[in-house]
Length: 174
Image 1 (tube, one colour):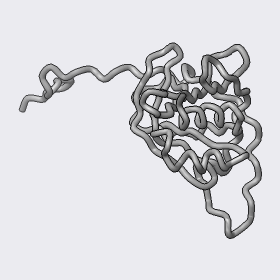
Image 2: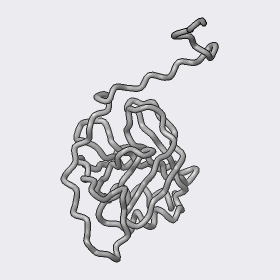
Image 3: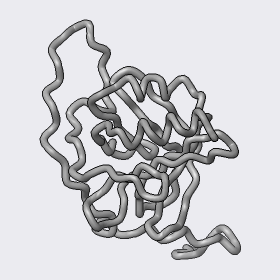
């Protein structure tokens, strides 16, 4: 009997792409999560419940709403493609491939096919029509919303006037 060890049964098998080490993706500092309301009429939001809000600030940069640490790379960018009337959302991520980008509020969510912008910084992006009904729910919220790549942990951020400005301007292009 002949035993073969270490043989590759697939000729010309493509090597798997290297994944960044876990410490290559820095943790984003958050405030403690807000308490979950014991109100039994409230709809559960597992993507946001027990998730702290990221520490950072909103600013307008070149017509885009940008959230992140002062002087650092952005965690999230919301922009408008006025010609296509689409709102583009992009979250920083240094891990491997991504399939979906999900935006969640306390009352609604939208899931988009993800695309990768190699950067720097590397971003996972998706877009929706400026007239998508989801933006009504997002703009109606005055607290916070979250962004999730595939099934990774949600990045929760506070609502801000900058978001409203970009979305409303995209809905009414010049």
